[in-house]
Structure formats: structure tokens, C-alpha cells
Length: 168
Image (tube, rainbow, N blue to C red):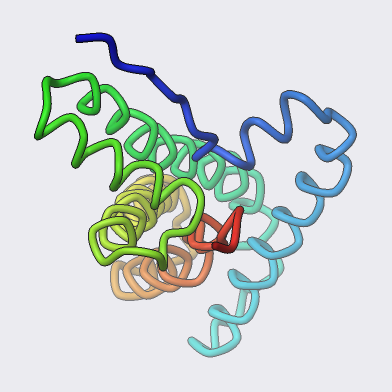
């Protein structure tokens, strides 16, 4: 039995950054701006008095760790492809879910749930990475660390994974 193996482009941001390096010029400052804005607005909502000092201390950690968390979520999405190599009928079903998630996560419920799981994994990573990064910041108490990490996880999760690459 001869199966055609297809590798769909589910890692849109990573592949675009690899093949079109000029996109880094937009992605890096854009991501930095969003991370700093979310952190600043969260500190404002918490009525924190040392916003500038906290922002100065944490901006680069949140920025780099956000990229790492997005990469973990993308690895989860990409890793699912290996299950499509299983024999039929399981491999065929997995390939259908994978291709649906890669091209248009809204096409099938399993494809949507699978892509949403990748977004969620990245969001959970953002929460734990940022919470750990804030341990070295004495300007924040434990409640503020939790609120900031949770806000960063929900708002800056890679929701772009849900953007369809192809409409059919």
C-alpha cells in the first residue's frame, strides 16, 4: 500500500519568518508593542504605583518568553502530523484533521479543537513562563503576579493559529 504523505503548513509564522526574513521587521516590534501594552494596561488596572519600574524590569523577559511559548504551541500542532503516518483508518482520519487544522481550523470540529488546543498550550506556557519571570521582581506581590501572568496568557496567546490559510 503506497500512501502519499503531505506536509501542510501549520506553522505559518515560523515558515513565513524563515522564508521571508523581512517579516521579522514587523513581527518583532509588533509583538514587543503588544506585550508591553498588555503589561502596562494590566498594571494600570491593578493601580500599581511603580508601573515604569516593573515595565523596565520585565518587558524583555515577557517578549522572549512569549516567542518561546508560541513555539511550544506550534510544535504541538506540528507534532500531530507524525500520527498521520499510522496505518489506515487511523492515519487517514488524523491526516484529515491535520489538513483541516492547517488550512482552515473552522472546517471541521476536530480540526478546530486541535488548533484551539495548540493555542491553549501556548497560553498555559505563557502563564507559567511569565509567572516564573516575575519571581525576580520584588515590586509585585503574589496576587499581582497571578493577575499579570493570567492576563498575558489570555490576551497574548497565539490566536493567529486560528486564522484560516485557505478558504474552501
